[in-house]
Image (cartoon, rainbow, N blue to C red; front, side, top):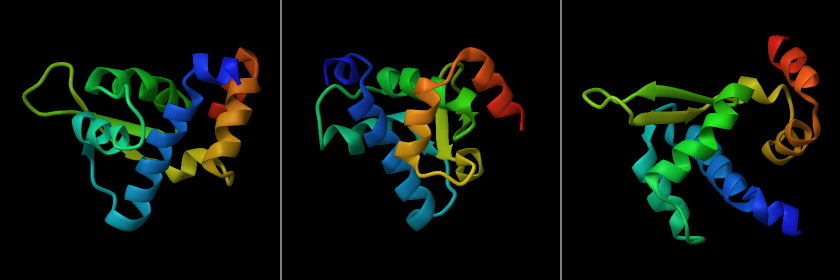
Amino acid sequence: MKSCQKRHINKTLNILHYLEHAYKYEGQEWIPSQIIAEKCSKQSAGFTRSAVGGMLKRWREAGIIESQLQPGSPNSYHYRFNPQGLKGMRVSEFIYKWNTMSYAEKIAFTSK
């Protein structure tokens, strides 16, 4: 449990499940990090725009999140969920698998 808390797995799951829900039920629109932080902070504290961006950077590299630079701002992104990146898994399964893979396995997994 402590290692999960240190890696903020609960916050990561919260953000990714929110983005998945928004993708399924609200359409494929781009969501600003500030909105993601506001929605997720209702369930637990510690969400800021920069914290959301930092957490989602890792999942952009994994391929389950897409990002787009916000017009008129050099460092603010909008995000949306990319279900094709899950490769048939649920979000929680994907996170577990990604966190337990070696670097070489991650490279091979994303290149498929």
